[in-house]
Length: 307
Image 1 (tube, rainbow, N blue to C red):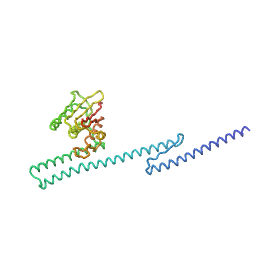
Image 2: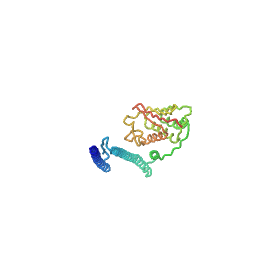
Image 3: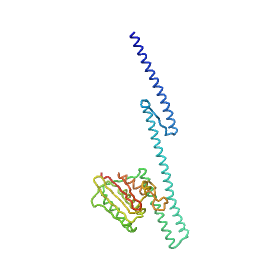
Image 4: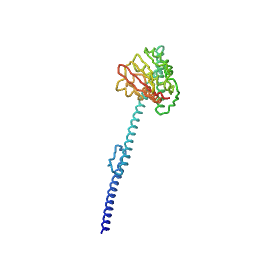
């Protein structure tokens, strides 16, 4: 009798196990069917598809991985579309910035070549054509430099140099330019040495672009440059008392081809500050801007002091 009870218990246990396994298998098959359907949906382009799962599901990890793949793919697709739109805007901007002055340049040169103008008017036309050609040359140089920076093809040559001495050598060339433009200036550069790993050409471009930005766009009458340091970093501030930048434009001024003057009546090509930011980052530094309309703008660069 005891043996029969034991066999009965074993049979019932085995039956329960079989029922459990069959139920589990059916659920797994159902989940695999859902997974297959979801994968087909994602494959067809529906990256919004997500899979729900319970805590004790055997396919829980697979479902989570599929959801993560779909989300990552969706993020990459969004970034790709944003990049495509940005490049379309870039091409449109380049087309406008090249086509307009080029057409104007050709017009002035045709007037000279066809002897439509003479004397002082001809000299004026030659001068305007020269300015247009110089603008195009400057634009193309900036564009090629930005492309190299954006693609990571720019080669830097870092040396341990005195930042203060290098800054003074760059600034001295700007004194006559500022004076001829009726700009007051104040340069506060310590006499002590600040040794840093610097690419001379890149650092020169940083300061030159920022000073040119002040001169062309600020509409101010005074600019200051101040360099200071602490144990961890060097700080460079360039400030002006000009018209400032509106809060709407401020977050975008380091973007490529971005111009606050959307009418494009102002000089510039929207690449200068974008190049500055890339060159600052190449020195492992940061750049920030603070501006108040009708009061002025301050650019702040921070460079780490580690050699």
